[in-house]
Length: 287
Image (cartoon, rainbow, N blue to C red; front, side, top):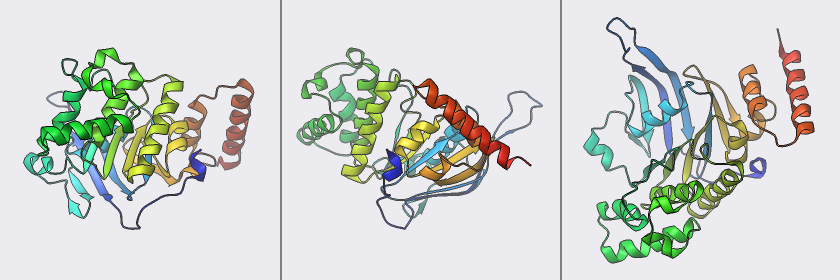
């Protein structure tokens, strides 16, 4: 689907990550620091989706956390909407919440089970200064936007399926009309049919609002479906990037071809055909 999508937005980058490094302390007394990100640079433009893909431990979630101020940036810069944000204090960071939001991986743990959906969605609105009346109206809009019934507001997270809970999490991220949402594996905990519906919802919302996404996943078939551009991470570095249609059909790197082969195809003959295609590519590009 995504190969025909055109990037909407200006040529000026909304987010620029410039040559950042992230180190974590070693766990033992004599342990060396762990170099989680190494000279990483990306750009995201308004209305664009950048898919960030790699295996577990590749550094993709750390990059998302660095953008959100949840991982220490040792060197380099993170510039959001013209402002360097990598050195902001926690208090100054809170002022960004209207424009920079996140959707986490697990819809079962990202929502407070003791709160109704209305209370969950009202929290960012009331914190942003909205009145009770305005909050109620905005909550109705949000539920409609993520295709949940109005009576969902009175219910608790336990009353919903995984896909519906993720829709609530998406609604919460949209409450303050952000410019960018960091989506950290937002469909990996869902079954395949639910994944497709939630991905379509992300695309619909982007077309309606112009929001940009950093879409983090381990599945290249997911980023091919939703992304305009793709960056592939391995061992804390970006090893390949480009238009989604190019990177997910004719990748340059053997590691990217490995990720493509790992993506499930629900048809044995097509899976075998794809495997032969990428094995042929590997044979032609081998030294």
